Length: 316
Image (cartoon, rainbow, N blue to C red; front, side, top):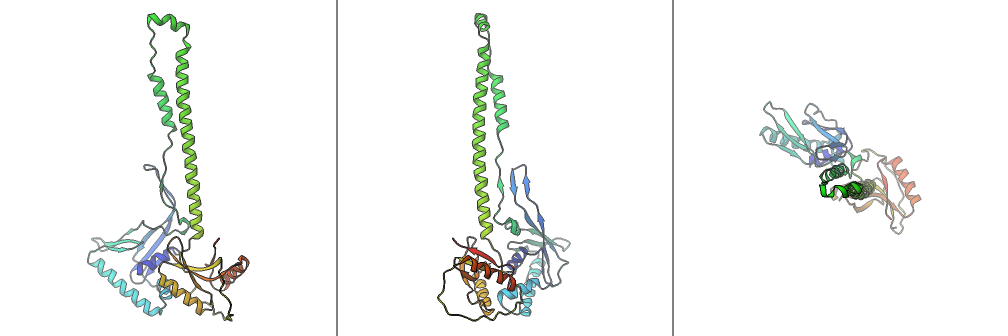
């Protein structure tokens, strides 16, 4: 689907042009705090649409042609056919919904209005982060309760008890002090317990975010034209490697299989399918190694000769 390829490219580029239709632009948006709901939102990419930028720059068509392994001209014709259907939908006064991108429609003046989708965050540095609501601190409320209790304590001195009160006047003040200390100590313990639980939640969230970022990969960013490597195949027993050189991860399994065949034609005879990660993406490897030193040497070679986006996944 055309919008899926557009969404893929928006992770890496700030402008993706759909030939004959317009361009989808992205700009960085800082983290946001909603003071009314105490909600925090992570940094993200804010999407917009510009109809004037419709000249084909080759980025989208080239990327789709490589993934689907067809000619540039054939893929360009498919894109133009899809654009014609989009325009027909808009001209009929209907809403055009693009998955993970947003909705488009024509206003009364015939101009395209774009409403971005907030279901997905295209900012890779915020991968794994989600919005959350912070509980307000209640220590000020406890202070008000103590004052209210002090004001409500009755002190009535009758003629019959005037003599007794004059002998021990300090008892009423002692009672107030003890009550205030009791409430204050309870509030202090509650505050400490609340802060400890909050710290545990924050630390656990940071661990989950770090783990997600380390495991996450998004798309195949290999260059289109690469030198052919002539390698001599040596027959040996397949080894089960714990250190994998990752070539990319794909949403569709068929695209992962195409990537494996492409790498094998380019000389990476050990390229294979590794499986899916926790995000449901199908991972493809250049090769796998049992020794970390050998894996690092291979990774440097791949980065130098094939793709700077290759990375090492070690499974313990």
